[in-house]
Length: 237
Image (tube, rainbow, N blue to C red):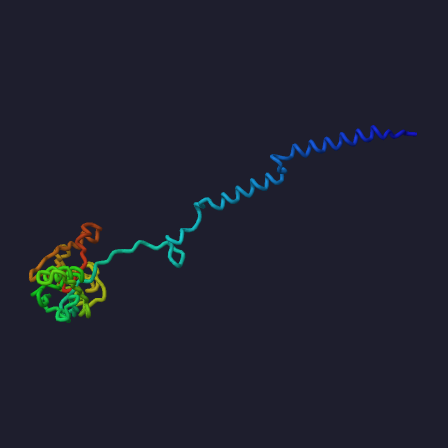
């Protein structure tokens, strides 16, 4: 028969318990179990990842429109230039007698109390306001002048000479020389394409601008393709 010694059994149990405690200590760190430490590390990495910038992310709300697309750069367009027969509203703040409608004369000029005769055609709203303010402030130093285009008579350009459909063109937007020639149906076979001129009347004087069609076709001297003002005449010899 096998004898069981209680003392040896107790000593063996104590040794096993001691070994288990040592194993537990190897898998702890600063009082935390290894599982807890790993969980903390994963959580910290996740949080730092959420706060980092994603190079493939969509543009921010400041850089996008309501549709979610990055807005394109806005193209600059020339401001409206006053033309003959336009109806203007000119007023001076706190001066009831200096608040009236003014019709631009066919020669492009207007008349206004304290300002005299002023050339309005060919000027933008702001340019005419500056000119009117300068003149009126000679008599009313603190004058605040407002100029408003109340009615536009039309934006007219003329194309004459050796084109397919010469004439007057009333338009709703600005056009350049090339566009005006297109509206006139293009040049005839006998046109002198490098002797085209644009005639413009400003302040009672005529200005002439050359236009060499052959260079424009080749992408050269593109500055000659100017924006036309109301009343400009394109002459194709």
